[in-house]
Length: 151
Image (cartoon, rainbow, N blue to C red; front, side):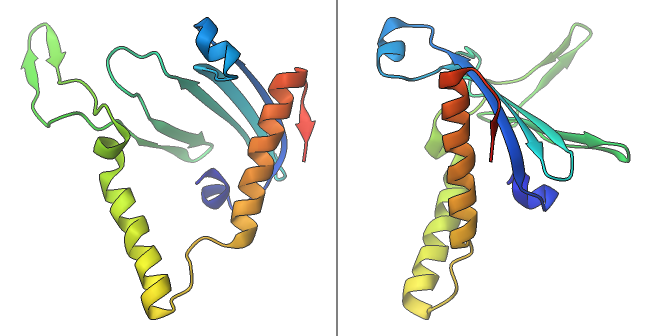
C-alpha cells in the first residue's frame, strides 16, 4: 500500500522488535515491532506494530506532509456511540482478521475468480510481490543484525 501510495520504492529499512513471552521469543515472533523505511525520493515511513492492545486490534494509517494529512481509522465492532459531558464512549474495535478484512477477502476471491474464469489480469504484479518480499526480508535482517539494511 505504501509503495503504491508514494509511487516509490524502499531504499533502506531499519527494524527492531521484542517478544513479551518466552514462547514467542523461542518461535521468533515479535509482538511489538517498529520499522523505519526510507524511500528513494526521500520520504521516511514509520510502521509500528503491537499485538498487545487490550482494546482490540488497532490498525490506523496516517500520512502527513507539507500539504496536509490523510488518515484511515479503526473499525469498531458496531457503530454505536455514547456522548456525554464526560466524553465519548465507543465499542471495542473489531477483533479478528475475518471481522476486520471481510470485504478485502471477498475482493481477493473475486479477483482470483476473474483471473481464472475470465482470463483477466491479476491486479498485483510479479514485481510488486518481489519488491514487498525484499522489504520484509530486509526488515528481518535489520532486526536480527541491529542495523540499517539497504535494498
